[in-house]
Length: 516
Image (cartoon, rainbow, N blue to C red):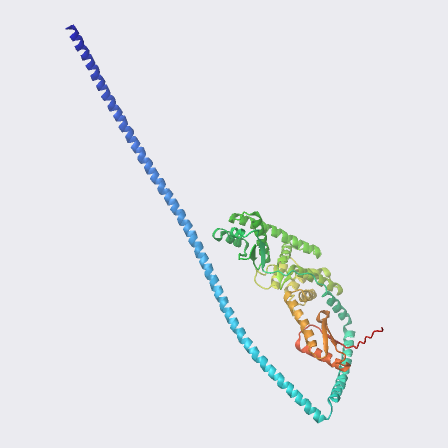
């Protein structure tokens, strides 16, 4: 019985303990479940917040990318429209040029046809004239009863008498002129002698070339969608021509200073290898400063060589700019130096102030340094600049009127005009004048060679004399006189030239024999 009670008591205790454990476990489970639910709620709240932030960030990135894309698209559309407008302008220009060429071709065809008709008519008239002359000669011989030799002798005797009278009158005329103007003629001889002093001149064009190490450099210079080349052209003010010519890029501009600055800048960029808009602007700005310093140094050097002092720095700079300015292929800086020396030499012979004459000659074309930037002709521009920077009245007057003979009242202006004409008009000084000079010499020789009996002819003394060698077996002394006179008349009728041209006809008999 006692054992049964013990067992029952044990079971009761175990049951109480088990019930307590169960109650504790249930309570613990409820606490854990509550904590889990709270944790889950917090996690869900955090997850919702993270998702919302992610959505917002994604939308912001999408908006930024859309704006960037739209901006780039707008820039690209703008560049495309600009390129289209440029192409349309070029197409219009090409169409106009094509129409002009077609019109010119039609005019040339019409002129050629007209010329051929005139040539045929002239040949017909020449044939008829020769027939008429021959008929009149035959009739005259029949009427006069003279032979051909007798008529020729009578004409030559009459012509010889006329020539003798003309030569005597000319000799007396020149004697009187020498007596009256001997001193002036001596000065003119000195002036003519100065024309033989010739300086070298550089013939420049409107383009410069830059050599490239390889063909890939062309693409780098052009840049992405042409950005580099557009920045370069905008910074330098020139046109860059990239064509199929291997290893070369052409820089084109009428302003010589800009063209030289662009050429140097492009060479620096090619040698450096770093070609992008910021670098281009940096190199161009540095080259511009170098060019300004060099131009000033050129102006100072010219003043030193010409012994000109007290010149305003601005005028010195403008003188240096003339190195990059040409006129008909003649370098303006060398031209004004030559004019200064010639004017000084002539002033010395005329007992005038050589320094004033030299200053007038050096500064007479100063307006050409800025005539592309200012309105008006270079004489008026130069005179205004010289007056503004304190030059004397003689120098201002020489610059203003060195191309106008009627207004050239000042003696130094006349000297400047003469020196300017000598420098510009002498053979070889200008490309166009040199070509006309060669044609005139060739025409002189062609006129002489057109006469029967002439073996050869030579234009000498810069076209002031032509020597004609005739065949002594076909031309006698009297016929030589006639040929000389006829050649002189033909030259007077066909050619335009300053002064006079001397015609010398040479006729001699040479007999050679050998003793053996």
